[in-house]
Image (tube, rainbow, N blue to C red; front, side, top):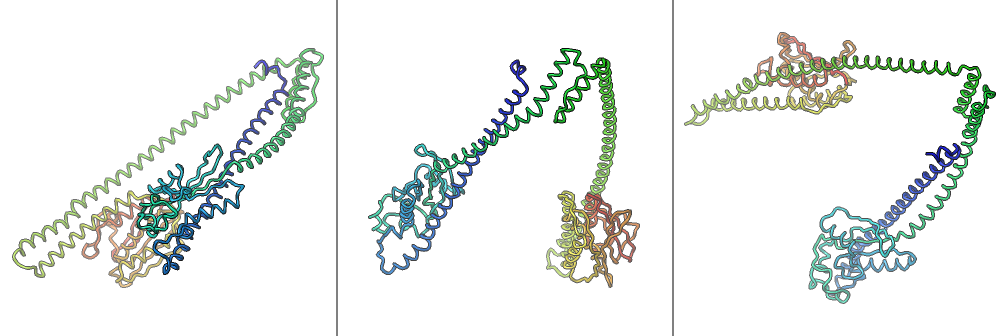
Length: 580
């Protein structure tokens, strides 16, 4: 610290700038070196995969095109024990092709081999690295390529392995048992190697080694050229930076320091000024210095400093007081907001609880009454059957009993299905998005028409109606409303159903209207209650769950639904869908 305090500002800036430039240079060179080395490896691996794929293509052509055709062509005159590896062994052919390739590229140290475990030719025997890859493939491994940089004899090589030939049934003649193989084959190979294999076994892996020394050497040459250029650029930038520091910072500071020393050493220099520098901040500093010198000359510096000090203290205290007032006001507003949110949540939870209790009461009524009613019918008619037809065959009356038992069971099943649907609607995932309701209603109406083929209904749909809603839940709600309207217009001579929209208080109110049997508005409060029906079951079958499901879906959209009707004058259902 003492050493730094004795150094000039220009020296400190020069040393600091030099250190920063050196660190940046080292970091950039390190990143460039790593990037170039990685790029060299990627390019080498890409070229290696091309060579491996080409070797595999030669294997495939040899095994699936050339060899089968030669076998077919020589079949009439080829002895059973004849064997020529030049066209009967793709591994032999690849090995010989590589010898020509090596002769043409004698300056490179590329290494290509069809590696196999227990290979017939020692030239193809897999080393430990290749053997491990083959064993992993035959254990069911999914990776058919493997690349790794290995040090061999102290030199780096990129070793790339690719899955080779897989033994087929046609290969087992020469690879299953020695006595099955052509006997002339043993003039070229041993009787102990590459037998007892099975179909589907990976017989070989194509192994390629690419020497990286040359690639690294070229990369290093490019790296050092880049390093020299970068160092030169950074050196020029460093010199420019030093000049700018001296011209616009250290020289004006030296002038300011010299003038301050003169004023401190003699009163005769009070009021003297220094020239304004070119830099804005130093120009402000020079102005402040000149102003201070003038004030010192007038003898008012102590008084002004005290006034300024007291003013700053008062300003700080005033700011602190204003901050405390703002914080207290914000805290009170936050408490008020939290209280309002809490009251709103309590109201919402209370409403949800009341709705749940009403649904629970309705569900209990259904279990105790609606489900028990078909059960009593099943039990009563079953007992009558046992009592009256125990010793005689069923007549028409007995069949009617069975039919009523069946209807009771079906009704009970429908009630259970509807209760499950109500629970699923409550638990279903909810996601709003823009939905074309006109198109959705048209699709729903067509499906309802297909489900009731004997009834012709005129359906009118207003075009261009779009709303933000959950498409799956809205499809269920519209189905229930449309199916309900279809059912209650069955007895009308010219049934009509209309879907449209009104604008009330700036909100969209959708409606579905029919000219069916309608209902008495005295019972409007029960129309959305689960398991409540306003019409006789024999005339209009139903469980009373459909409109309860619709109400649940509309409430999940934060909307409202209501019904208006007149006996013999049809019914209209109005609903809104809230907002996002």
